[in-house]
Amino acid sequence: MRNQANPWLTNNLFVLGLGMLPALVLIAVLLYFTAWAFAFSFTDLALVGRKSVEWSWVGLENFERLFTRRGFLESLWTTIIFVFFSAIVGQSVLGFLLAAALRGRNSVLKNVVEVSIMLGWLLPDIVAAFLWSATTAQTGLLNSLFVVPFGLKPINFINEFALPVVTIANIWKGTAWSYLLFSAALDSVSREIVEAAKVDGATPLQRIVRVQLPIIRPHIATNMLFITIWTFTYFPLIYALTGGGPGRQTETLAVFLYNQSFSRGNLGFGSAISVAMLVIVGALSLIYLRMLREPK
Amino acid sequence: METNPAHSRLTALALAFMAIVWVSPFTWLILNAFDPASTGRLAIPQSVGLDNFADALSGNAGRQFLNSMLIAAGTASLSVVVGISAAYPLSRLRIPGRNAMLWTLVLLRMLPSAGVLVPLYFAAQRTGLLNQVGVILALTILNLPFTLLLLKNFFDTVPVELEEAAYVEGANLFQIITRIVLPMSKAGLAVVWFFSFTGAWNEFLLPLIFARVQDAFPMSVGLYAAFGQQGAIDYGFLAAFSIVYAAPAVGVYFLLRRNMNTGFAGVGVKG
Image (cartoon, rainbow over all chains, first blue to last red; front, top):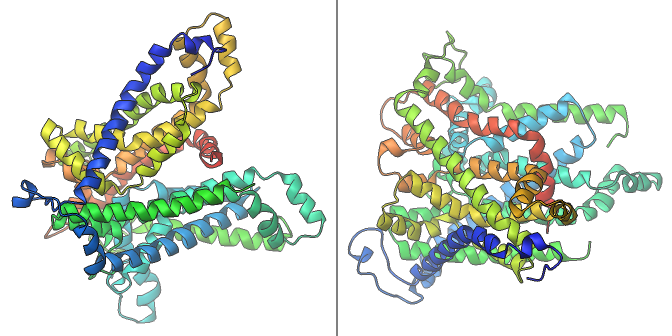
């Protein structure tokens, strides 16, 4: 704390410290609760019944169950597919393409596209789920436009293609974030560099792949970090749309965690699931942060 | 991307198509919301009326709207006030390891919220906070790491020289913060407030577990409960209710739109 040059700060250290106090208290509470969530993962605590009061320490039993019982590994695989297709392929690529295509345009079209993809992002999760269940229902838009006019029987998309529907709904909902981030990133690439590459005879594709993408690499890493983590732990849309079903087809880890903790009441096992999720998310974040730190 | 006109027109066409695809799921919502005799099918209404909206704003539904408003505005304002008073010292004082600490906290928050929910629930139960105040406090706690990081980054961009000049002119700490720092990071404050507001407005899991009685339901839980209900579902009402529920978050965004875009640049660049 050596800000001798800034007397309005050094003279008021007490006031500044006092200002930080509420935040520090709340952070301490957060840490305390997180520590408890960790501790629960070594117990057989239950939501109701005898074990909600007389719980005991069970060591690593919960973590063993992750690998020996059915459920966790299947959910992990579902989550990986969901994250890969909806966040990495869908949201990032689509967001980047939109940002690149709309760059430099200053027209009605740009505003219209921006507003329409923002609507998906701004919509509350439960409304989005409601909307997609109506769109894919037997009397919904998809069937009335593409199935019934060809004389086919209406398809119940949520039952037949649960994972693709959830994936598409999440792309629809989340692309705006990637778009906004990439569009801010592309604005930071100076026009001169792109022009210079053009003069040197680079094709439009080369200009994107060789010039713009390397420059905005830190933004790509930031974007990947955020959307991977969000999608990995995303709960309400899937839960409200399918509840993890049919069967377990859309039971991602977040839904699995909720079902185990609050439907079945296995709080100890549920905590072990969330610890495992934290480990996976932490490992992914480290990879992305490395990408971020390498020389620009 | 401006190579030749034909190419550009093709891109424009593709973009327009994208926009149409994106808004198409709304057709069902709009058609049913304005149809007083809605059946839940995708059909042009026989008559157009606002009866569904009247239902969606009165009685139980109206109370749920107020609950959501209270939770969202309360969380956003509390987060911003607590955030400002901690982020300013964090940005200006050279506290060792402050960046590592903030990032650790943000990563810690990546823990799926259902995990922290269990201890939160027990604590709220013991302190009698299983109500709106409890939801506001819990959401503020969960938001805080992200809020602090964003606000600190925005305060970092305010030049210290300006504060120095103000100090020389005789301004005290309070004046420096309210007259210089806050106005200059207005965009950042708007972004943080907006994020907390929509986050709390959309929040589903926490109120689902905290709200014990129907009177305390916010709209997210209300809507979920309504379309899970047995028997005849009133689709017109649900569609109108969805629109009412979605409107504030969308509205606040368009009010803050200009600030938002500048704010986003700040989110992305900071590593």
